[in-house]
Image: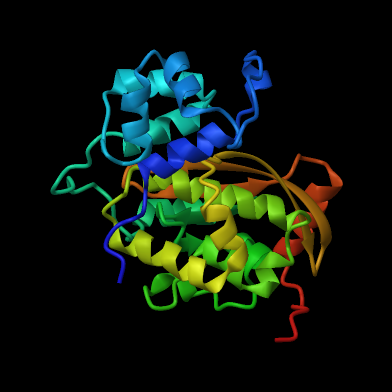
Length: 286
């Protein structure tokens, strides 16, 4: 049983180095390149560190570096803000005894009331692992009407949105561009892994997805990082057809996340979402 999430600093640096072509950053090609992307000495020069030191980091001979050095490497590798934040997390020592965080899988009465009040949006409460702790009727009808509405109330039956997206054919079929959704899911797991390196349940989730989905496994080793908190998604719902929905995430004080999907007011997608809110006969045959 995995005890921690694999956040390999050397592997991450290597993957980020290999994705950059010299011409992207104004380097003139010199000779035949035997490796993809930049050479280690080129990254070191751009970051202002010795080639030997950078090589030790990439080969895991040195486990950690100062925030200043890591930020310099991030600039040399042209990392995004999320990617740099992840690098700073995995490139510094994790506490020997992780600080107990104010997180709970319990949903307060006030939060449950908020979920129910937002009836025009599909709303759910997730923990950082994307376990669904509560959902309103519209979220349930949008994503998983083939599951019981009470499923989030018990730990044994509680659905996980990322597991559903990869391992549940009903849910996979909802996305007009499932491959894009899959990339977002894996990027988010990588992002949060930096904060939760000692979380056994997160490690177990990643292990289960790796064993159960070749697509997840291939994306996970790509080490892409991103905190996907706002955007739009296109759905092909079996009841109401095409839906373009905006989504947002808001952090709650207990460490959980409020996730909601809504349509542009007055649009055909808004009308379809309102139609879905009506008690329609389910078309799932399973």
